Length: 136
Image (tube, rainbow, N blue to C red; front, side, top):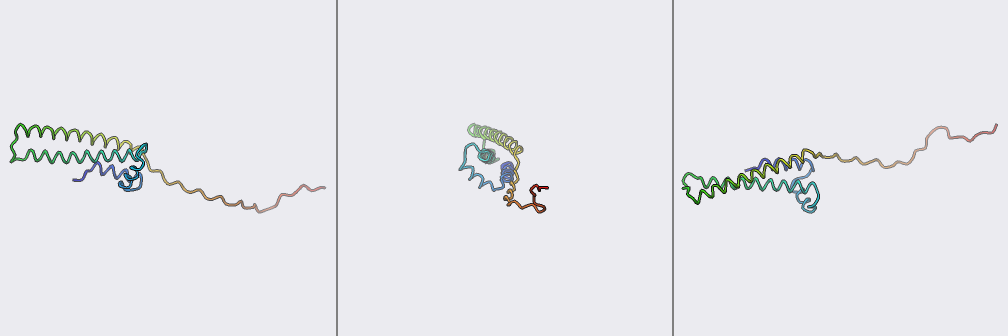
């Protein structure tokens, strides 16, 4: 099952930095402290984990409520636990998505700075050369 929020965030990070998310995560891994890239990729990873946990817990919940399965005291506890974990993961996912989206909205890709032209040698000005004062 594709995770729409984390995929959208990954695409926005890729657009901002102009590289695939895997390369950006590898680069951020070598410079983990104090960089915006490290913060963004870390938040993206947290978002992915929350989405994976939602998928996993939903699958488990569906198994627990299968029509051919009896629900007793033991199963009821598992149902509550799955529902609680889903709620926590949804809250985590939404908070991560909101925060990362707000940060990305405030960042813009800076166009490459054009290389200044190399200093050309001074070209002599054509025309009349300055003349010394003539005696009269």
